[in-house]
Length: 390
Image (tube, rainbow, N blue to C red; front, top):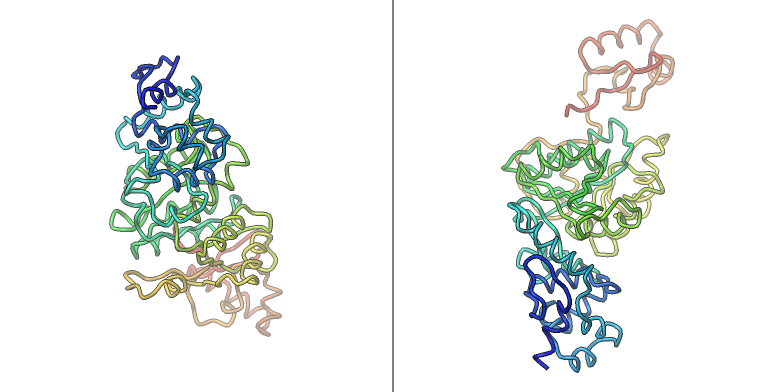
């Protein structure tokens, strides 16, 4: 039986660095399993439960394969490695040979323990950057791509606060809330918990293109880029829900900042619940479609949060090192007019109704508040509390 194992591996395949009729290396076995047609993460997990690792699977005898696995899966392992698959293996090994590039297999000590608990855990992760962040306590911060300025500020502030407490901030590198969360975590500096960006494309196909600079900054400042998808994987809608399961799986909880009722962030929250993770949500204006998703989560049992300590209180005692953010936080001048102003634009007429003050008094108060920097003028002469600094 031993003599037939090499023949079924690279038979008739001629690639750089690969000799035909030789047994695979352990890493070649892992790459093949991660890309084997018809073998997804769930079946791969079944294979790994039956064999010690991918290498043992591909070196197993036909009798052992047929005894432990469905006939179709056993037959795939017995076939010679197809040229297309051998090319993927070659390209992946070339990518991994570059500085700062890593292939983290399911059996690797660097593989995140929380991710390993998933029944559909990735067989292998492409990673670029500092692998140590994979083993830190992590919180996901996700939300709408077309976020409001307040939402962006909240994501940035909460991510910065959690990173300064030593938590790694995980998100999906998307526009909007994801990008602000990564930036907030980076602002905590090298002493912070860092950030992980989970891609929904191959590592050589950064998406969105506008975040290529952010991706570089994440790597340069001690963070990590991660993907389970093969090199060259394009932007496909079906890949993003799969990406979201990794975002949730890496963490102890998910904070949703802003989301519509059809948001992918709600998929992440649902997956988090299924994995036994905590779900948090920031409330907002009842008039905004971007808070309907977060309000729905709160109605379903997600914890409403207004400050970072609300999150930490769910995970045990953590020493507070810095001033914590509050959702849509502002200063508090002693003014009845200021107390009547929220973060949604409001007119002077509405303020008169809320305060019961004469129009001239309201106008004088507004002038004083604006000069003090306590309010912002918005479109149509309306006013609102200022957004927190970035």
